[in-house]
Length: 301
Image 1 (cartoon, helix red, strand yellow):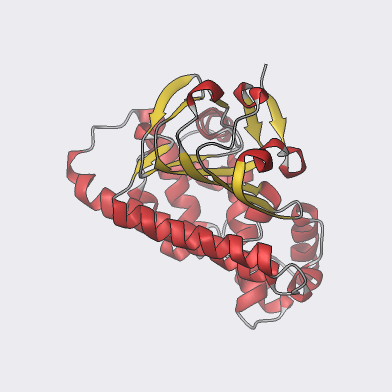
Image 2 (cartoon, rainbow, N blue to C red; image 1 turned 135 degrees about the vertical axis):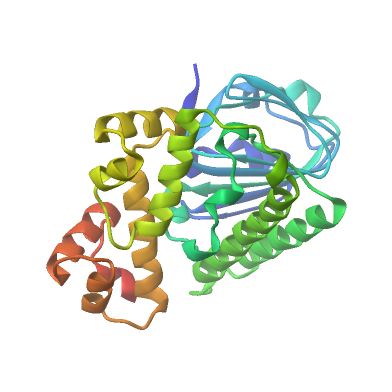
């Protein structure tokens, strides 16, 4: 049976890594190289509470992801979320080189991503795969980002800026991945197979949240736009993505709020009105309920 692990539980990876760095409970980087040996318990099925990325540089990595088997080749990127189950066959890993990055869910929510740059039309939900084939140049570019992240973490342990630098480096990695995805989507946009009605609902819901999250936070609003009931919308979103419709809406609103609090130069009251809250107090309660801190505390952190 699979188990869900957190950053503090990723212990064995250091023993078979030529380079390793960890920043508290936020993220772990490891450079896995041939000849370091593999612990036997790596073959257990696990979920990680956050985002997992594996950049295969050479060799082949046999993996089971969500009960499907894959052979990860050189210049491939594996991307797994908190709901994905991973199992690696340790006996077949003797000759691989890879970069791994584990980012906690909490840290992911604190990364500055501008949703205005994310085009939902570029992502086809019915063709989702955890593996992205990269060109050698793309693989090399991502490798440089990850090396910078490792150096920032390993060499600047006493600096008060480590977390902020890392947050922006990881945002840069994510933007770069979006760029790769966007390029591929442009090449395949005209040849995509028709989506099922259910997938269309999920796709259209994400597009609507992207468009209206600053004004509307109720599931009912989005259900009305799709001409289905809120109950049915909640059901298909949960079944398709592992998260409820309300959670997706909150995620967009909170990330938008964090971006505005940290980078807009506006005060809390101005941001509350921009996000269509009736007053600063209701925005503060909403923000603290979902993040554990007040908008002012976040702005000063």
